[in-house]
Length: 151
Image (cartoon, rainbow, N blue to C red; front, side, top):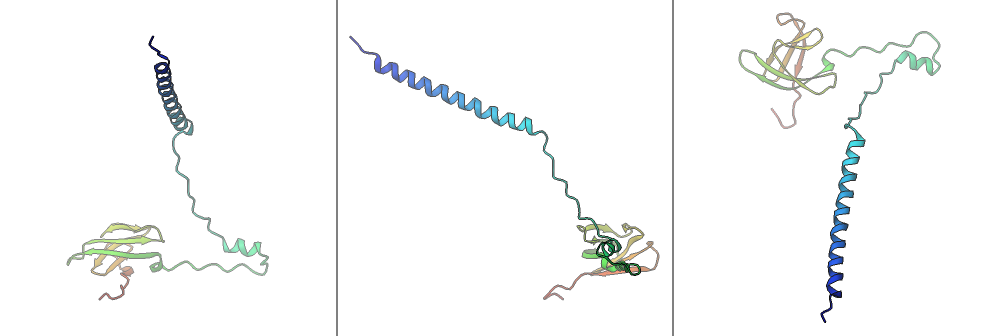
């Protein structure tokens, strides 16, 4: 008589392992797909710049009662702009890479508006000139910063 007990347990064990693997796979993908659907569309975090403090309001809050609080002087026009690069030719046409009010720099072509009331009038090898109109008098002259060891 031939015994089949040993082969029955082998078949049962292999069958159990296959079903366990299938159940684990279904559970994994069910959780993975279910989590993505429940999360919804990804939303980037909104970043707000910090509020600008009003010097008069801060002075009143801290108990300043005599007279009015001093008014902060407006920054000079030249300090609002930073020249980071220039592409110029002999006819003073080209472009300049300018940062306005600490924002990331943007390229501006000669004649384009840089800020409210100012256009890029001309560019030279290490200089950019801003004016109210392309033909008007120079309002602001920006120079590239001198690099250490440079000429």
